[in-house]
Image 1 (cartoon, rainbow, N blue to C red):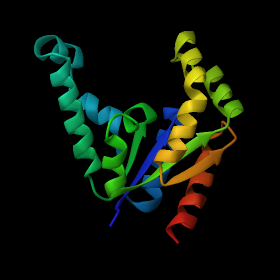
Image 2: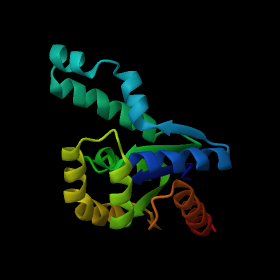
Image 3: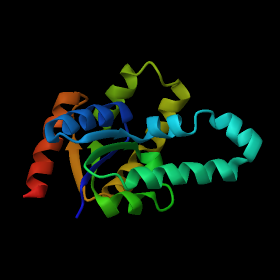
Image 4: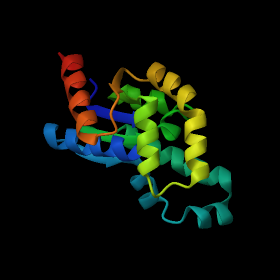
Length: 167
């Protein structure tokens, strides 16, 4: 039986916000994969320098596998990790996977407001947006259409879709 909810999206801040609310709603553990990897591999640059990139990648894969096997958790992870190798299969085995599909206009508005991304990162995000959206929809159990940059709207749509999916 699947005991986790796995949220994947192209805008991590929104996905994380929705994940937090769902974890509270369902009284589940919130697992932010990026933060868990950072914690477990405190100094990735040093590990890579000393042990090599292959060792670092194996350690990351181990952490991903561990998180995918959690129970009673809402797991938030970026599309880039979810789509890498066999990661999507690992998460689908123990969780209902949900893709937060942003409309292009909502995605652009979020990028415009984002002060943490460089202009090159924003350009790249727009270039890969359509391809990643198509693949995200194919890889996940459920797709939630989000046409607004508002986090609360994204949460409400996700909650409604999840409730309908689980009926």
